[in-house]
Length: 490
Image 1 (cartoon, rainbow, N blue to C red):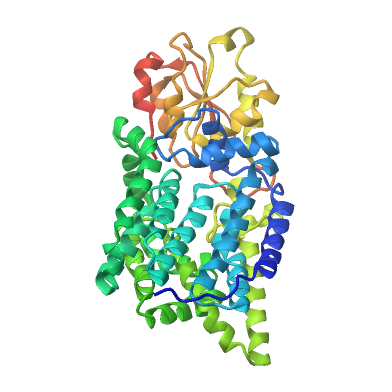
Image 2 (tube, rainbow, N blue to C red):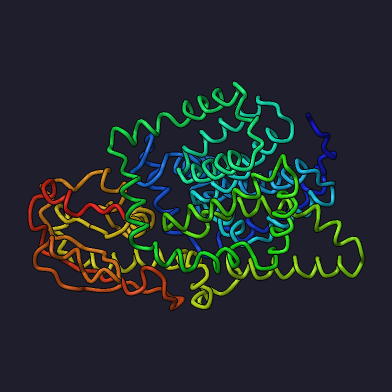
């Protein structure tokens, strides 16, 4: 039976969304590109139905955003800002779907706007930017199915799922958690609708091109995922609870606790409450990153807004609520947005290392240009720049032409698919290595000597600080033979 909902608080929610857009736009170019954004720009120049480490949607959005709004940091990030604005609206709609009045809906929009993960992924382009929006939208449509019993909402859910799968496969964890929880705690009548199969068919149809690409290329994303779990799984498990609190915001803990209790007490929605601990178990089992479970935690926070509004009926409690939200906004902004001087970023790197990854890329290109200058002019037509990771390659591709550098090559992720140098490129080879890799690349080349290193003017310790610039006489064998050996999936 359909239960009526309050009127959507369009105007006040739009005010929250507009403030988010203003803040993100004002700060969008304060540091610089993130290493992943440099990779997305390169992937956008090689549009395909798939890449070894991701589906095609984020590179496609990056290409569209820079085409429409300018090939700059700010132009690239317009699409992230738009996704963040949409996320505010979806969060408010979730509160409304659960019976939240205008105040609860606005509070839901504010709650997501002051959360650390939202600001982190809304500030820059990442697969998580669109993943967050997709997860919340899927949760919204699932709640509509549960509230109304109208199976036609399975079509909207399937369409959103298909689009989400074109961005990141992690959304399957959400689907698994929701379905298992629904089967265990009910109501199971939602599975009797013929529209469920129709929704699944829509999802498969939309996601099909990338699934086909992965299948014919031997599912490289599984190789990437297993490598990430092997490298970081133990640390991810240890840090799961602390980072769940820090990345959402400790000040929002009462929201999602209230939301869990609120949903668990309502038979039609209780499966959504229990889906979160189930999702947490799945993420821990696979050694995934703690933020993988955060979107569903935000759904619980949205559910908690209506009880929080009731609790804050007294003036003193409203002051407490306002202070808590203000503290959440300030702490989340300091951790996730470029509000600090770049030189101060080492202080927050243990919580959010992605801030520091937006600093120093033009200086990396400067260091590479200095190394390139040591190659005699008459040898440069057969010389190669080879990098250890896609961030380095993306930085040289972005900033190198202004410094007279040729296009770089790398065996990392999809850069390997974009081709090795020609076999006629017999050297010299200028290597850009990774600081912690113990010069592992040099065994593939001859006559190597260090000619420089990467530094950043901010003096911070990020992933490229101290990266060696190494000049080698040439590759140890033909590039076509060497290429499979230098390929890296993680």
